Length: 172
Image 1 (tube, one colour):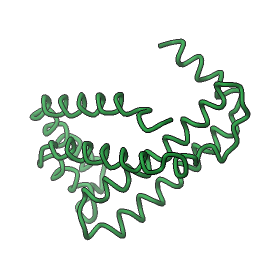
Image 2 (image 1 turned 135 degrees about the vertical axis):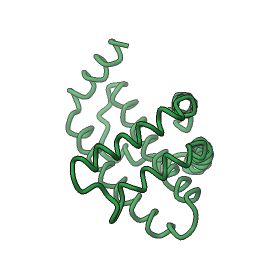
Image 3 (image 1 turned 120 degrees about the horizontal axis):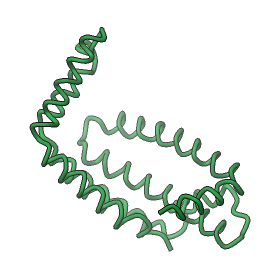
Image 4 (image 1 turned 90 degrees about the vertical axis):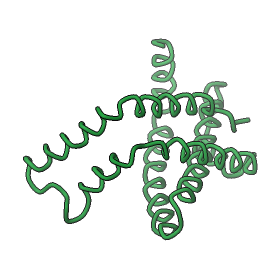
Protein backbone atom coordinates (compact mmCIF):
# COMPACT_ATOMS: atom_id res chain seq x y z
CA UNK A 1 0.00 0.00 0.00
CA UNK A 2 2.83 2.40 0.82
CA UNK A 3 4.21 1.83 -2.67
CA UNK A 4 0.86 2.86 -4.17
CA UNK A 5 0.94 6.18 -2.36
CA UNK A 6 4.59 6.74 -3.28
CA UNK A 7 4.01 5.91 -6.96
CA UNK A 8 0.95 8.14 -7.05
CA UNK A 9 2.88 11.02 -5.51
CA UNK A 10 5.74 10.60 -8.01
CA UNK A 11 3.28 10.66 -10.93
CA UNK A 12 1.48 13.68 -9.52
CA UNK A 13 4.73 15.51 -8.84
CA UNK A 14 5.84 15.13 -12.46
CA UNK A 15 2.50 16.26 -13.92
CA UNK A 16 1.01 18.36 -11.15
CA UNK A 17 -0.43 20.99 -13.49
CA UNK A 18 -2.76 18.75 -15.53
CA UNK A 19 -3.78 16.64 -12.52
CA UNK A 20 -4.59 19.72 -10.44
CA UNK A 21 -6.36 21.46 -13.31
CA UNK A 22 -8.50 18.43 -14.01
CA UNK A 23 -9.29 17.97 -10.32
CA UNK A 24 -10.71 21.48 -10.14
CA UNK A 25 -12.41 21.10 -13.52
CA UNK A 26 -14.01 17.87 -12.29
CA UNK A 27 -15.08 19.54 -9.08
CA UNK A 28 -16.69 22.48 -10.88
CA UNK A 29 -18.32 20.27 -13.53
CA UNK A 30 -19.64 17.91 -10.87
CA UNK A 31 -21.25 20.74 -8.94
CA UNK A 32 -22.74 22.26 -12.09
CA UNK A 33 -23.95 18.96 -13.53
CA UNK A 34 -25.34 17.79 -10.17
CA UNK A 35 -27.21 21.09 -9.85
CA UNK A 36 -28.57 20.85 -13.37
CA UNK A 37 -29.53 17.20 -13.08
CA UNK A 38 -31.00 17.70 -9.60
CA UNK A 39 -32.89 20.83 -10.66
CA UNK A 40 -34.18 19.67 -14.02
CA UNK A 41 -35.06 16.16 -12.95
CA UNK A 42 -36.04 16.82 -9.34
CA UNK A 43 -39.69 16.43 -10.22
CA UNK A 44 -38.97 12.96 -11.57
CA UNK A 45 -37.26 10.45 -9.36
CA UNK A 46 -34.10 10.14 -7.35
CA UNK A 47 -33.32 7.03 -9.39
CA UNK A 48 -33.06 9.04 -12.62
CA UNK A 49 -30.80 11.59 -10.95
CA UNK A 50 -28.62 8.75 -9.61
CA UNK A 51 -28.39 7.15 -13.06
CA UNK A 52 -27.47 10.36 -14.89
CA UNK A 53 -24.94 11.37 -12.25
CA UNK A 54 -23.37 7.91 -12.38
CA UNK A 55 -22.99 8.02 -16.16
CA UNK A 56 -21.31 11.43 -15.95
CA UNK A 57 -18.98 10.25 -13.16
CA UNK A 58 -18.02 7.11 -15.09
CA UNK A 59 -17.14 9.17 -18.17
CA UNK A 60 -14.89 11.44 -16.13
CA UNK A 61 -13.35 8.42 -14.39
CA UNK A 62 -12.43 6.84 -17.71
CA UNK A 63 -10.77 10.11 -18.70
CA UNK A 64 -8.69 10.06 -15.52
CA UNK A 65 -7.64 6.48 -16.34
CA UNK A 66 -6.60 7.45 -19.90
CA UNK A 67 -4.44 10.29 -18.62
CA UNK A 68 -2.85 8.17 -15.88
CA UNK A 69 -2.10 5.36 -18.35
CA UNK A 70 -0.45 7.74 -20.82
CA UNK A 71 1.58 9.25 -18.01
CA UNK A 72 2.55 5.80 -16.70
CA UNK A 73 3.86 4.83 -20.15
CA UNK A 74 5.97 7.98 -20.33
CA UNK A 75 3.75 9.80 -22.81
CA UNK A 76 2.91 13.44 -22.38
CA UNK A 77 -0.80 13.26 -21.72
CA UNK A 78 -2.60 16.47 -22.48
CA UNK A 79 -5.65 17.91 -20.83
CA UNK A 80 -7.93 16.48 -23.53
CA UNK A 81 -7.07 12.96 -22.32
CA UNK A 82 -9.29 13.61 -19.33
CA UNK A 83 -12.34 13.86 -21.56
CA UNK A 84 -11.75 10.69 -23.57
CA UNK A 85 -14.43 8.94 -21.56
CA UNK A 86 -16.97 11.02 -23.51
CA UNK A 87 -15.63 9.88 -26.88
CA UNK A 88 -13.89 6.51 -26.60
CA UNK A 89 -16.10 3.51 -25.86
CA UNK A 90 -18.87 5.95 -24.94
CA UNK A 91 -21.64 3.40 -25.46
CA UNK A 92 -20.00 0.90 -23.08
CA UNK A 93 -19.23 3.62 -20.54
CA UNK A 94 -22.85 4.84 -20.60
CA UNK A 95 -24.16 1.28 -20.20
CA UNK A 96 -21.76 0.64 -17.35
CA UNK A 97 -22.64 3.98 -15.73
CA UNK A 98 -26.32 3.03 -15.83
CA UNK A 99 -25.54 -0.33 -14.22
CA UNK A 100 -23.43 1.24 -11.48
CA UNK A 101 -26.05 3.95 -10.92
CA UNK A 102 -28.80 1.36 -10.57
CA UNK A 103 -26.74 -0.71 -8.13
CA UNK A 104 -25.79 2.37 -6.12
CA UNK A 105 -29.39 3.52 -5.97
CA UNK A 106 -30.43 0.06 -4.86
CA UNK A 107 -27.82 0.08 -2.11
CA UNK A 108 -28.84 3.56 -0.96
CA UNK A 109 -32.47 2.46 -0.75
CA UNK A 110 -31.38 0.22 2.12
CA UNK A 111 -30.79 3.30 4.28
CA UNK A 112 -33.18 3.58 7.21
CA UNK A 113 -35.90 6.20 6.80
CA UNK A 114 -35.03 7.68 10.19
CA UNK A 115 -31.65 8.70 8.78
CA UNK A 116 -33.28 10.83 6.10
CA UNK A 117 -35.72 12.27 8.64
CA UNK A 118 -32.83 13.49 10.78
CA UNK A 119 -30.99 14.87 7.75
CA UNK A 120 -34.12 16.77 6.70
CA UNK A 121 -34.12 18.51 10.10
CA UNK A 122 -30.90 20.30 9.10
CA UNK A 123 -32.43 21.84 6.01
CA UNK A 124 -34.46 24.99 5.54
CA UNK A 125 -36.29 26.68 8.39
CA UNK A 126 -35.71 23.79 10.78
CA UNK A 127 -31.93 23.99 10.43
CA UNK A 128 -30.03 24.31 13.70
CA UNK A 129 -29.52 28.00 14.47
CA UNK A 130 -27.31 27.75 17.52
CA UNK A 131 -24.45 25.53 18.58
CA UNK A 132 -26.72 23.82 21.11
CA UNK A 133 -29.31 22.98 18.42
CA UNK A 134 -26.55 21.73 16.14
CA UNK A 135 -25.18 19.39 18.80
CA UNK A 136 -28.69 18.14 19.54
CA UNK A 137 -29.04 17.37 15.82
CA UNK A 138 -25.69 15.53 15.87
CA UNK A 139 -26.93 13.54 18.90
CA UNK A 140 -30.08 12.59 16.96
CA UNK A 141 -27.99 11.52 13.98
CA UNK A 142 -25.70 9.50 16.26
CA UNK A 143 -28.70 7.78 17.85
CA UNK A 144 -29.99 6.76 14.40
CA UNK A 145 -26.55 5.51 13.42
CA UNK A 146 -26.21 3.49 16.64
CA UNK A 147 -29.69 2.01 16.26
CA UNK A 148 -28.93 0.88 12.68
CA UNK A 149 -25.21 0.19 12.97
CA UNK A 150 -25.31 -3.21 11.26
CA UNK A 151 -27.36 -1.83 8.37
CA UNK A 152 -24.87 1.02 7.86
CA UNK A 153 -21.99 -1.49 8.00
CA UNK A 154 -23.67 -3.63 5.34
CA UNK A 155 -24.29 -0.61 3.13
CA UNK A 156 -20.68 0.49 3.54
CA UNK A 157 -19.39 -2.99 2.72
CA UNK A 158 -21.62 -3.27 -0.37
CA UNK A 159 -20.53 0.17 -1.54
CA UNK A 160 -16.86 -0.66 -1.03
CA UNK A 161 -17.15 -3.93 -2.95
CA UNK A 162 -19.05 -2.17 -5.75
CA UNK A 163 -16.38 0.54 -5.96
CA UNK A 164 -13.51 -1.95 -6.04
CA UNK A 165 -15.19 -4.13 -8.65
CA UNK A 166 -16.05 -1.22 -10.90
CA UNK A 167 -12.97 0.96 -10.52
CA UNK A 168 -11.58 0.48 -14.02
CA UNK A 169 -14.19 -1.80 -15.55
CA UNK A 170 -15.29 0.54 -18.37
CA UNK A 171 -11.71 1.55 -19.22
CA UNK A 172 -10.04 0.12 -22.34
